[in-house]
Image 1 (tube, rainbow, N blue to C red):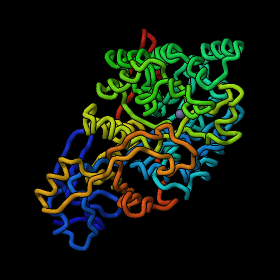
Image 2: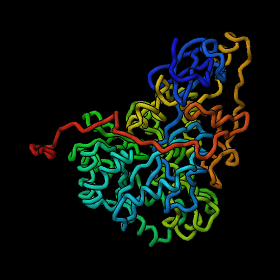
Image 3: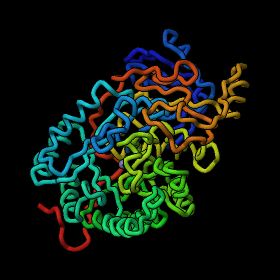
Image 4: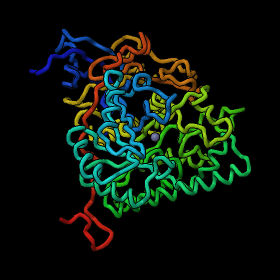
Length: 507
Ligand SMILES: [Zn+2]
């Protein structure tokens, strides 16, 4: 056998899980940061290589968290690229897609992208890329700058907001952006909530002096998400482009997505851990505690929405499962406490980058709600494909980056390993989460007290062990992570179908 690159590391006794298969008793040979081959007894073939024994446990592709806010000017007490990506690797995520944000007055995207590069370069523990947040899509940006950013910059996605005064676009502007992203083969992400419904409700609440954190959820009822979701699907159908609706939380909104998919529209959606586990009851915490869980869309009152999000993960309504990590410190005058007088001043968002993979693994896979293949698809394979990283990230196959997560063996896997090798496997002692265990730079976690029966035991980034939970914790360094030049989505494309006789893009 001839292998071009030399083998540095062999992972043995892996139960490889990809989006399609579970392959027990595998060895994985890694060299030059890539997966070189899969097979049996590879340690004998490559005696010089280091060996890591997975002890029969699941080995999955490194997590791709495609929705992460790091070091943005609008959350000054949030995580930096350094602290955010440090927490990523400790939770099994090896790629993050963060945002480079245009403000309304920015006339050019180039300085913004350079600025975000300067913030991230040399500071990341995992690989990273940027989505562009467009708030002022001028013709010169759409026609002249974006083609350069796609072609030379490797930035192949944009995010648009239908809500928040400083960010939101009118429907007409959204259509103009869609025309451009269609031409450039970019993926378009949307925050779908009806801004004016929310503003109207907020005014009503403030007039009644109902300003505690809990009223944040009352001000943003799910009907605002439902309407905007239906509207954005209609805009995308009119413009004939694929979209991804971010952080969905509402049963009715998810049903709109499902119906669109049944009609074969390339409509994708994402949900996040907070919408699986929490209701707005969390916002009623003692004193100002509820502010910790102020995020948008808001946590929903009725648990039927939580059930609907779980169903959407299983039945394919959701393409990706992201954290929407967008934290602010709690005990800080310009963090959450900026909103002690009224919920409208509480910075939106919560931390979740490190807990995303383990929360779904423990409460989805281990409980039997979700297959391990579905877990891999949602947390890694689909985001890699949707955002143009399909050739290098998101699966375990020769030629792909050796980004891997090794879990602790389940009881069954440990028993099999014992039978095969005669050696005992290390199982993990379940624990209740405490914020002090996490690696972000945030003074709380909404997942405090959550039970975890498993956690990434090792995280491997391009062949390097960057997290070893039992021996040293974070072993990687800032600067290990590289900027990813991304290409076109391999999951979705325009259909070339128009709503009437007008072929919008005919030359
Ligand atoms: Zn977000």
